[in-house]
Amino acid sequence: MTTPLIEAEDIAKSFAVRPTPFATRKTLKAVDGVTLQIRPGETLGLAGESGCGKSTVGKILMGLLEPDGGTIRFRGKDLESATKDERAAFRKDVQMIFQDPFSSLNPRMRVGEIIGEPLAIHRLVPNEGHRKKVLELMGMVGLSAEQINRYPHEFSGGQRQRIGIARALAVSPKLIVADEPVSALDLSIQAQIINLLDELKKTLGLSYLFIAHDLTVVRYFADRIAVIHQGELKELAETDELFERPLHPYTRSLLSAVPIPDPDLEKAKILMIYDPSLHDYDKEKPQWREIFPGHFVQANSREAAEYANMYP
Amino acid sequence: MPDLLTVRGLTTRFRLAEGDVHAVNGIDFSVAEGETVAVVGESGCGKSVTALSLLRLILPPGTIASGEIIFEGQDLLRLSEDEMRRIRGNRIAMIFQEPMTSLNPVFPIGRQIAEGLIIHRGLSRHEALEEAAQLLAQVGIPSPADRLNDYPHQLSGGMRQRVMIAMALACKPRLIIADEPTTALDVTIQAQILELMDRLREENRMALMLITHDLGVVAERADRTLVMYAGRIVEEGPTHELLSSPFHPYTEGLLASLPQRSEPGRPLTTIPGHVPSLLEEIPGCGFCSRCPDKQWECGQEQPQLKEIAPGHRVRCWKYR
Image (cartoon, rainbow over all chains, first blue to last red; front, side, top):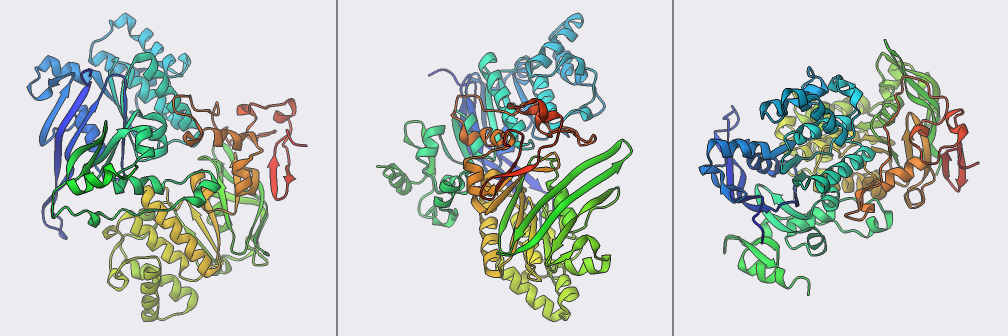
């Protein structure tokens, strides 16, 4: 197997919750024991509900947050022991696209400056080539050259997201962490941006960590999907495998809750509600287990046996 | 079923320094008793302005320029502000999208639910709080009597939305207008809230006007669906027919751009371009600049809503 582009092994992150008059100081485990890999050219979907820790995982992989425990390896190299130059290269190779195209662009900068800034920071192109490169990036994401001097407020949500994508692409990254990149957009615009991301993936050989709560978008876009709940990975499998043979009860409840825009299928659907108390984890703690080749699930040995026979 | 609400020619404008924004342009529709009608469309299509207009909650610089809103036999646009206040929350209730901003953060939830009961039904404070606890139980909040003194920040998003629903139900309205009631919620909570709204609607024989951009939610819940684009209704019909055989190119485009209806690996179908500015009055069809089936007259003259199958109407020059 090829070396994964990026690997997270058993990463954990807690946040101290500040004491308020109503609650004493405590820590919140945002991410606990998450292990995953992203291969070159692959899109890994990270799906879960709000507060489950999916954005924290994204920020740790970006190097924006230091994990409390575990290791991150980029192209096989442990970031902890990386030199300053290696870290700088890592920061260039991993870029982010944000959810809200309204708050993630500086309203006082022109489009050309926004897209050109990373080029200047990483000193990637000589001054005379700067403008040409910015225009090239704008063309890649479907913005026209005459828009270079406009400000973000002059653009619609979908176009702003294109600006954010161009800025991420400026430094020719290998991995893009896309945190809910289309959830703030209207349906018809959403499709345009997904197509753009897909096209860029093919032409530039990018890998994505695609973080989303909307399973239908993840299903369309991701090669493999990891499902996260309360800071822990529950299940990870190839996209079709996960939808055809979901094992973990949380994954199954998530799939059952997605509304289907087809009245006949929708009426036949049965809603399942996940009840964490059905696990017998007081008897035996769960582990991250591979039930079918490439299909991982958090389970103890009793559950593992049950899951293995779930789809005869 | 007789019509509970009939809207004719409703037009709402916002007078801005740059010019008039034609947010809602002469829309006609009706809601029958006990029926669920969905209004779908993208941001800026006028669906929320329509909802606010029905309750006359449009604030300056917005005005309702013309039209009729006949509810239980009377035209709401002809009522005085006092008479209108007796309708809001009592005969027509509204559930807003963001439960955090639409609940008052400085009052306990029990008091907020009780307020409507005291004003509209003349209950005493004590009776109203008792009823509030029952309502909380109805919307599935555990140990409701203890929750009455909780403040909104002590509840999760799903629980707050349940409180909003309890408030809307308090006076047993005939019509509930829900503006994106589950958009801020996670899918599993969304499914529970929609299930709950549907059950309570049936029990109390209310009509529901469900404003949403999520076609999955529409398929699940609505009897009839209205599709809005650029301030107009472009298609209207029984949900099943509308989703399985849409007539308007915009509805077709929306359905085609759903990731569920595309094969993985193939590019998604998109609608090119973007929603037109509502600052200028559009002479022809609002969708024509993005329409794959555009004909010469599309940009010249506004097509009319035309019934082409039982109960299924479409506003498009393709059908004449």
